[in-house]
Image (cartoon, rainbow, N blue to C red):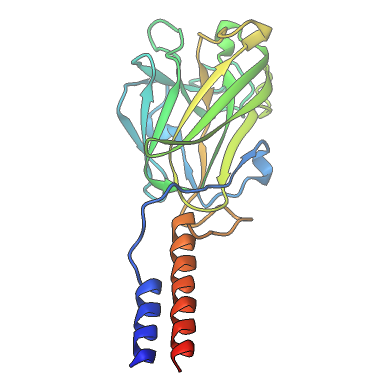
Length: 253
C-alpha cells in the first residue's frame, strides 16, 4: 500500500496541469540577411504597388501567416517601389524593383510614426531590410529600434546603427530577431531616428522595410526549447516530497 501511495504521488507530480508563469525567452539580434534562417516570406507586393495602406490592413505570407499593419499616428502609410523600375517611387538602397511597406503618408509624404506588425500566431524569427525615407533627404547615418512582444508582454528591444543612400544596390541594412527558446513573438514595433545625423527624433519623414523573412513552427535554429521556471519548480517540489515520504517509510520499517 505504501508503494502505491508513492507511485500515485509521483504520477500526480509529473502529470499536473500547467502553472502560469512568465516565459524566459532568449532572443538574438541578427544584422545580416545572409545569415538569417527563414522558412517563409511575406512580400508586400500582395497589397499592390504605390497604394495607401490603412490601419488594420492585413497581408498574408506564402504559408498563410497574417500580419496586421498599424501606424502610431493613424496612417495611412503606403507601399512604394525601389527604383529603377517601371513604377518606381523610392530612391533608396534596396534592390531595384522591390515593393516596400513604408510609414510614408501617401498624401503628405510625411511619416506616420511607429510601425506595428501583429502576427496571426507566434513566430520565432522575423527580419527585413530597412531605410529612412530617401525621398525626403533622410540619407546618411541613422538608427532603428525594434521591439518584440508576446501578447502584451515586452520581450525586449534592440538597436541598429545603419547608413542610408540612394544607390539602389541592395545595401539597405538588415534588422532581424531570432527566438531561440520558443515561438513567442506575436508582434513587433519598429521606428527609425537620428536620421541624417540629426537629433532625436529627426526621422519624421518615415521609413520603409522590404519583404519579411520569417521562421515559424519551432524555435529559431541554433537554440533549444527550455522548461518554464514554474514547471521546474513543480517537478523539484514533487521530487522533494517523494524523498520525504520514502524516509518516513524506511524509518517505520
